[in-house]
Amino acid sequence: EAVAAECTISGLRVRSGDMPIDVKITRQDPSALEATAMMDYAMTHYTIEADAPAGCKISGLPGGPQQLDAGATAGPTVIKTGTSATATITVTRRDGKETALAALSVDGASLDPPYE
Image (cartoon, rainbow, N blue to C red):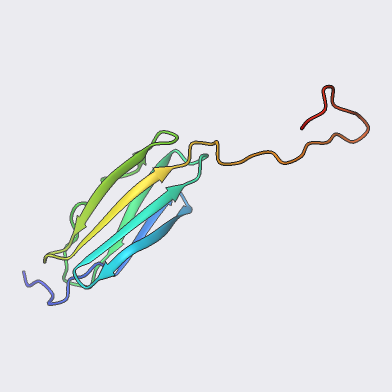
């Protein structure tokens, strides 16, 4: 089977079910792509998807959804095509401590002690 001359990774996506996960490309050249993905705390699993031109085989994709604990980092996962082109991605799940409550009020009532 012939391998296409330009077997580069042309697309890289990370999802949690139907929800896309933000991917930040940190390096991109013809033979290598490096990226990070940040899952929301509410997401428990992720799937990595990659595209390459017709005739190129992709290997290294995890089989099916991968579970990730809160605050944990998975990877790097190295995805390859039929040539030396690679994509390396690291996935991190937020730990749930990233959001701070700025104010709290209740209509018709007061808090004792007051929220500060």
